[in-house]
Amino acid sequence: MAAELHVELVAADRNVWSGEATLVVARTTSGDIGVMPGHQPLLGVLESGPVTIRTSDGGTVVAAVHGGFISFADNKLSLLAEIAELADEIDAARAERALERAKADADAAAERRADVRLRAVAGH
Image (cartoon, rainbow, N blue to C red; front, side):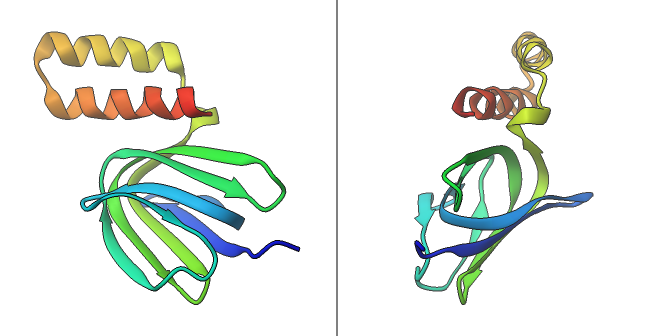
């Protein structure tokens, strides 16, 4: 059995995903980070971006995460996000329309959120 780490992806309003994984890749204020079992303890600030979780059964879970914190110790990884959506939950057409509206309105924050949603869907 391959080494595993326990992952909890939690948004402010719900538990988004929980399970065993072999690798998690997330974007922090210091850049992209990959966490595998046995990684040194860490605490960081999440940037908006896709989070990719390689599950222990060989699958992949992708989520759009908008801000929050990442914490790892004792093979337990916590991703505490302000907003998080699994790629399966994202309506790509709606996200594309939101991106176009944000560009037209010059709303950088809305544009970034829509872009992250579309990248999560594409990475799924």
